[in-house]
Amino acid sequence: METLTYRIDQFEGPLDLLLTLIIKNKVSIEDIPIAMICDQYLDYLDHCREMDMEVASEFLVLASELVLIKTRMLLPNPEEDDEDPRAALAAALLEYQRIKTAVPLFSEYYGVYSGRFVKDTDEIPPDNSVIQNQSVDKLFEAMKRVLSNVKPAENEGRTFINPIIKKQIVPVSLKIDHVRNLFLKKAKFKFIELFYGAESKSEVIATFIAILELIKIGSIGIDEESECTDGEEVVLVAKNIEEIADGYSYGDEYDRKE
Picture 1 (tube, one colour):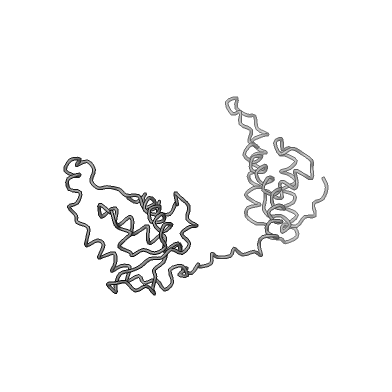
Picture 2 (spheres, helix red, strand yellow):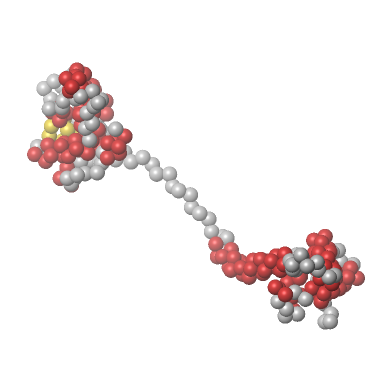
């Protein structure tokens, strides 16, 4: 048998040593000549002791397992025991071999990507450019005046005839189209004029949300320079209303909530 000159620190563990012996002897993992491999393994550990090298406990544990397997294979097997005593060891060696084969690939990935850092998501500041200098207080007061003119009992007759319908659902997207069409015909409206013909609070609220959406995207805006007869009324003017196509999708999220 060829003299072993390996040092214990050259191996990452007992399976690494055992796999090295199997490769060196050019034998199959599935059919390990356990007597020969066991003897070489024990000789290697004895050689380490002769060199006053400390042998790790896991190497001794595997040595004991090899001796046990060798003993079981030398003894006659009962007929009911058909399991190969080397099977568990062979499975562990095959798994270790697969991992060891993959190490160079992962080492390459580590060399390429270990120095990289994932950039954190930038905090996006709020965009106030579209509704900058808009009179929110004036809009709020104007909306309160509109709501005060809508009577809660307007639809009582309809509810009495058909009590299954609890409230009339008015799509916000429909009101966006309605307000858009108004501004396509005329460039300036009093706030209250956009609610003419509203038959319920649901329709009023849907119209108000539609106005807010159009202000938000810059299609219409509050005319700060306009002076109305009552001195308080809000006037809205068209800006980029012609860029809004029919069936505009804004407002769908509000319709789903309803």
